[in-house]
Amino acid sequence: MLMTTTPSLDGKKISAYLGIITGEAIVGANIFRDLFAGIRDIVGGRSAAYEKELRKARELAFAELETAASQLGADAVVGVDLDYEVLGEKNGMLMVSVSGTAVRLA
Image (cartoon, rainbow, N blue to C red; front, side, top):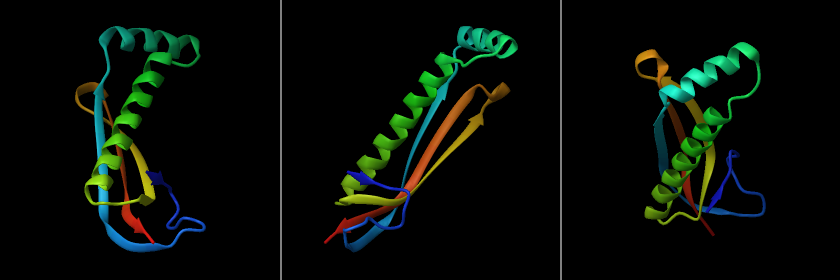
């Protein structure tokens, strides 16, 4: 499935706009990871555990977007927008949402 942040695909003609589609993923943070991430924040450096969770959430959201596009018979998704939010008590959850327009190519 072709996906792009641009409103069109170079060299491709869009024959039909099938609608706006979305994909979301919400992941929770583990208390032990939170503890070690807090320590890492104090001493500096990157939190590999959080980066892994963020990557996983992003991959899940894009997989949902692709599924939604396929269900509409789309060949591609244009105008893709990716957003991140923290949710829950003490910001213990991470939500990744992705949206775009499903299109059929000529």
